Length: 482
Ligand code: AMP
Ligand code: ZN
Image 1 (cartoon, rainbow, N blue to C red):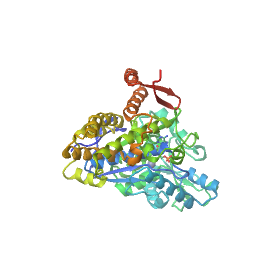
Image 2 (tube, rainbow, N blue to C red):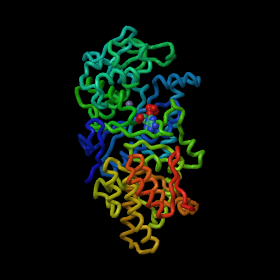
Image 3 (tube, protein in one colour):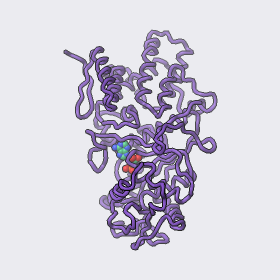
Image 4 (cartoon, rainbow, N blue to C red):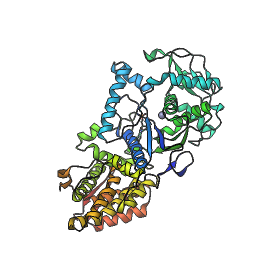
């Protein structure tokens, strides 16, 4: 059985991932902070994690997937107060909205989805442990800090040198000036109650207050996955200081390796800048729907770029996704009988193994660090002769069956939502799937500064009668009218 290999942020190497104990692959993903609708940049991260899980499960392994909900922090408190709604109701409302969007995007539900507010005692226990071992200290105002100098490997994940480490930590703590710290890079574990917190405080051995943001993922990760687990994931922005702090406080407390592997995916960008609430350049799933696209097209588009490459968001990408999904759906219709479902395939993978048939190269590309652009390139190469054969009626029953299973593995790995037969047959698609695919490969080559490959693909498109126009939003493909 071939397993997934991933680029591990900690070792900077590609490593095969597998359960360290027993049969279940245990992994933790930092979840949404629920103070507004998650934007599609957040969903890029959650979708990459969903892809990761699907590929692991379709390899025949079981998983235990924990993704938290950050339901108390500076932002949730501030926004709930601005909305005039008590924090629990406010956070519950945005959590429900997150679930609706996640379902629409066909994301698998995590096995456990713990919230920070429900795990205050666990967080307090962790702080007590760190205090008893000398890794944490009280400040005069009643807050508790982690003493970074007590954990020498600090900074290993993000490879920070001492100078950067201090500067980075100082910037990363919003209210750094309001706390007493004997070292600029120490981070807060317990924040003493302040008037601005309103009713959002809890009792602790150090008085009233609330946990620091970094603490919840350590406490809940260890509670639901054990002190050591297989993999921890998040967007690249979380690498420092959040994940660095998680490692420090967890490993100082247990003396064990916290997560064996670390996986970070790149950001979704808009006009060259990270999509984020603070920059006000975000799109939500509803914004996408208002523009005439669906969650299926969004999902396809967000997973079409390599998880280690920034993607610049554009509507052209959704248009392209539509064409490609229609093409895949047309072929599924031509095969008849529908596709086997996800659970059935996972069970087959675990027992007899998957019969991928001609789709082996597509699957292999996914196993290589979730290389989705390569997988899509392979997919359309594999599909071309099959589509022709299906149209000519020359596929026999055995070949149809193999194609159904092989394609189903790919469809379920990506979690694609295929359009129904009517939409699939819609001839209004401007750009044929093959052309869209070439255009996307050229775009990917350009993003990686592979100019020779980008030019080659542009020429190939030109030979097929299409031109690419690049713009600030991305690119568009048009028929060459000249
Ligand atoms: P938050 O709700 O801010 O806690 O973020 C949830 C997840 O979204 C984290 O893993 C972030 O790293 C990730 N994230 C935030 N902005 C982006 C973006 N523009 N592109 C991809 N992932 C993002
Ligand atoms: Zn986290």
